[in-house]
Amino acid sequence: MKRSTVFLSALLLMIFGLVAPSAAQPSQAELDMYTVRAEPAQAAQLVQEGLDVAATRLVGEDVELDVVLSDAERARLGDRGLRVAPKRNKDGKTQRQLAAEQAASGYNVWRSWDEPGGIRDELYDLAKRNPQLVKLEVLGHTYQGRELIALKVTQAAKEVPDASRPAVLYSSNQHAREWISVEVNRRLLRWYIDRWRANDKDIKDLLKSTELWFVISANPDGYQYTFDNERLWRKNLRDNNNDGQIAVGDGVDPNRNFNSRFKYDEEGSSSISAGETYRGPSPASEPETQAMQGLLDRIKPKFQSNFHSFGPYILYPQGWQIGTPEADNPIYTALAGTDARPAIPGFDPGISSDEL
Image (cartoon, rainbow, N blue to C red; front, side):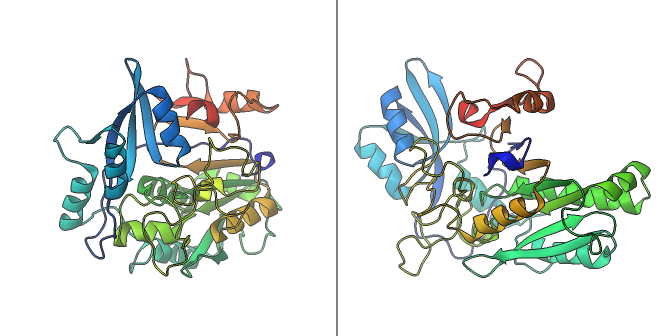
């Protein structure tokens, strides 16, 4: 992501593993989360190989990693002599088992992109019912033809030219499995609309002078795939090997495909196409990136909040190498807080490459 376009990219990493896919069309190689115990050098090698490492912690002289693996990947790590065990919750259930249970019982909160009354339908409905406040824009289309949608929320949204007022961008769901990011951003969008309709003076004044942009799902292909096929899918749906089907090893990480510092090293992103942090074949190669980057370049937001899930962090936007603060760091610190006094209690603020 272009560092100059935003003051703070707040990746609010909340919860994971509480939701599940439908049972239809199981993926060819199901994913699950495992705990791997390794020496530090081995752990670093696993990261460099592009494995989907969700968390790490020190255990004595070893490193314990939470890793999302296919059955084949799990077997290969075992063959290398690494200790690999399914990660279980307090009830002894794995992520795959939790997903199957919730799929069987159905959902009372989560909705897919495609289903009738799903996320896409809700965005169109909000724009239709609030024409004086909401403008819907289709920024582009995904590999599977889904619309990449942004909503502009401001007084006289359709009459006022884009970027004529200071802009704020709220984006979510770059990573497909992060359902909670969709829900947080969707509720924030509705809160602004509801408060405006309730004649909240502060919100009315805000929306006369500011334009708020919402990208509720930056990866609708992947998001839908987590409902229809594989709950733990993370990337978009690029067919990396051009075999006409999507399976483990396909996809690009949309959060690592932006043109800024592309292919800087093999730590923060991977050139291995099967890796879960695969950056793609070239800068901004993906339709999702092109849509988001085009919006950023056009509206030049003063602030962006980019919601993710899994860990309690508030991350600054730059992340291309460790220990690299920039001139705006005092602003980031003022917004995000410090380790001693974080803006959100229990969260850890800092430069993303350092924190992660």
